[in-house]
Length: 120
Image (spheres, rainbow, N blue to C red):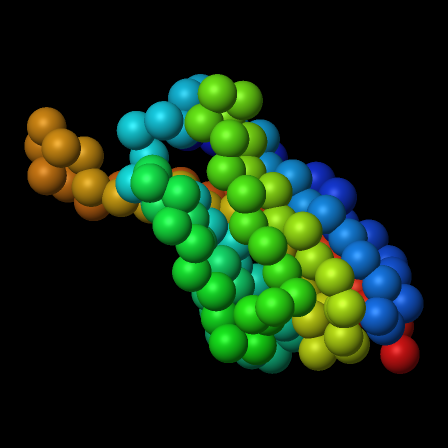
C-alpha cells in the first residue's frame, strides 16, 4: 500500500489545518490507520489512530484539538487539526498497520510525510 500525505503548511498559533492521506489501494482490510509525527531532534510519536471499526485513539497532547477520520470507500484518512500550537510543529506521517489474517505476518506502511509548522 502506498500512502501519500498532503495538506501540511505554515499556520499561526491557534489556526487549523487538515491533513489528507490517500492510499493506493483499498484500506478496508487495514486494521489500523494512523497519524504520527516527528519533530526535529525528537522521536516519532503517535498522534492518532483509527481502527477498522472506526474507533479512534488520540495522544493526550492532541485530545480535543485533533480529529481523525477514515473513509474506506475512498481509501482516505484525514487529520483535522485545530487550536494548533507551536509544539505541534513536526513532519506528520500517515501509517497503515495490522496483521495479515492469512499469514499472521505484521505489516506497516508509511507515507513520506508532510511538514506542519505552527508559528507563535
